[in-house]
Image (cartoon, rainbow, N blue to C red):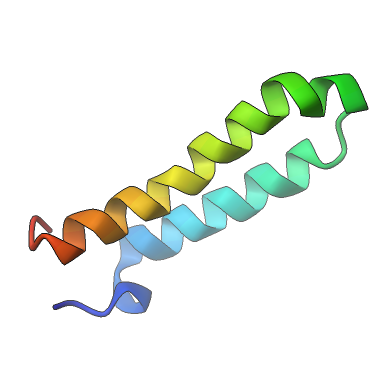
Length: 59
């Protein structure tokens, strides 16, 4: 199995998720509770999907 930390796409996914979190945290409470929650979950799921694909030897 490949080491997830060494995969460029995993590193990119982590940077993207971090950037989204930093952006959303500055939004108003209403924006965070509506679009922000969905945006953060979507960004976080990218890394999870990559990890799942690696575990299944698809990548």
